[in-house]
Image (cartoon, rainbow, N blue to C red; front, side):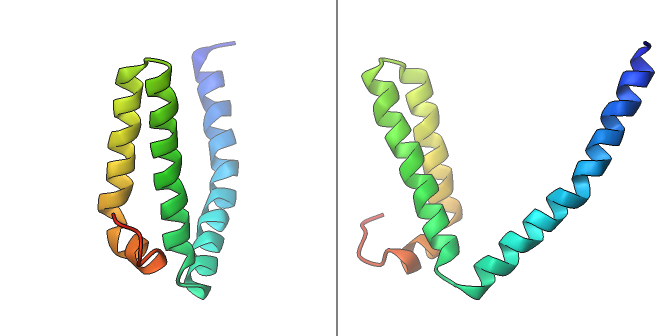
Length: 93
């Protein structure tokens, strides 16, 4: 089997998955629009997830990955600060 056969099958598989992905993204967008706190709730969970991973990695002495998790938490915080403040107005970000 040549590499073009594998490439063609891979492309075909991705093309079949694309409509499903588009529907999932659209459904997520519509559901988040129906409840304005959901995007903030999702962002807060992502933020907490990265911070918790940082603590675990630091305990395991994997400083590089711990720092990476903190950078990801910081990115979530910067990108979604207004949503986070709406969802958790009393939380000190």
